[in-house]
Length: 253
Image 1 (tube, rainbow, N blue to C red):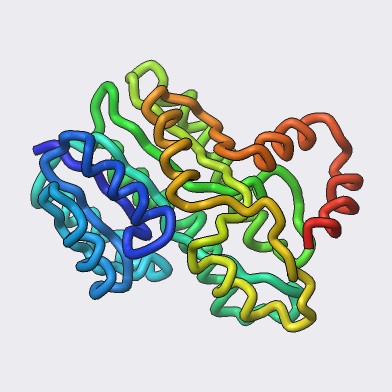
Image 2: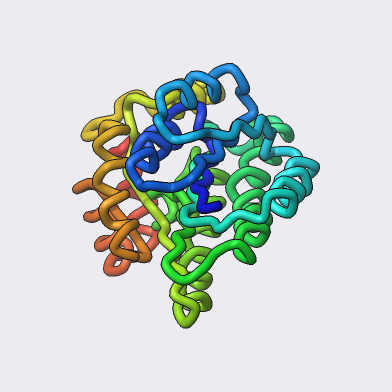
């Protein structure tokens, strides 16, 4: 049985990728999120048979449950897209321990453990996709933990892509700018007590970002910047000093 797996599939980019995978001629699409009701709504929009896995990826127990399901069904994984995630804006000292631990868990621990669990079920031509952010390209004050987690995920993805190249397994890191029509901004702003982030100029559309990036995922691109701002950010981060990038980041708040 050939399958595709999407985490964070209940909303946002995860749901958009699930819709795109619906056209990929896989036997099943496995949808992962902690929100079972909204996962069901995503499944109802798909023609492909879906399996709902209501897992909270901030909890390590979910990783072993996911591995158990893989062992039980022993599928061929054509696509694994880790789109689950959340951010918190504001001063690091104002962040709760729960929020900080949750960001590290879902963007770092879950990404590594779920990817490791999936790899034995991949074959030549399979795709591993980690949804990063252009926040990965530099340190970002008042998004410090989130940006650091995405930097970890980007470097993990690039290294893994090189390791798996001889086996013909593709690894992609998708690094978009703000996406305006997902829950990310509204959720992240809850901790921005000083209202440091108050405009999101040039923010992209989720469906457009997913569609553009998916074309490049299929081509096996390693680092994907699916919009103008993220592409410019990637280029500038390779040229300009980090201290200057940190200073100029205030104009995007």
